[in-house]
Length: 357
Image (cartoon, rainbow, N blue to C red):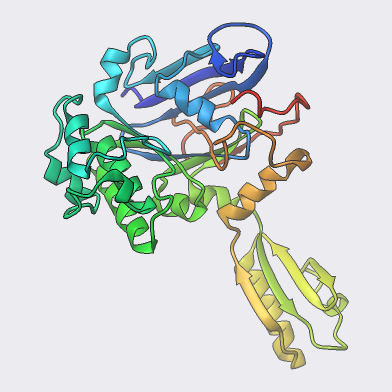
């Protein structure tokens, strides 16, 4: 089956002085550097990335808002830029900011948008799905930040999209609103909708994503399922030793680092090494204050990538916490389904990307 989203050796270059990614001009800053990935139908895929990684630049190519400098982008088997009429009625896009007229009411805004949408949902259905029932007569300028995000989502869902692009969907929502949005996204996925998600909340990725990938400096550096990505990193055990007990007295198999009595052990076998530690402490009557044992987190994997090249900033605005992956056999830069793939990357330029976007 044709993937819902597919990119092959995708590149985007910002020509100096243009401020926008252009087609096939030469020179300038290359924000997206030959990435390849695919998203199967009915999957939630999280695109993560460090600051300036090229995530926003990539998503704009997939949404048909710009033409690649090289390579190809396909959505539902079509070029989203050159075959926009075949793609646009079948996708939904939730931007970070909708920018709707502030004096319109919620209902007026949805009706206006529905008039431009083929097969639009009824207004009441869109409001109920996003928790805005009862707010129909409220003007946009009177909505809270979270309610505006709910409205943005309602409009993205109006056309019953086959592919849904969600850019920071829960920013400004309270905990209950965030959970409700997660449940809605899961329902859409279960109904066959393909979701490409970008978010600052790594908890959101762990809760929603079937697969994820992380970009750094325009390239894919790590991808897989959330469990695979975290399992590829060591777990940790932390505790404080009592006065007079040294880390050097710990069992030899435990590779520990100590700072002022505070000990951290990194391990690939958390259960076994924790058992060894507790047995040693029990036999010696030693109390391990503040004992904390846990598997690696997605946050740790992300921060490790962000720290590469000694920098996590200096890039295209909006390209904070983003990614990419691929199902099936993948070309260069792609990621086979069910596998964690890493790529060593180095800085190819010292030039800051801020003037590119």
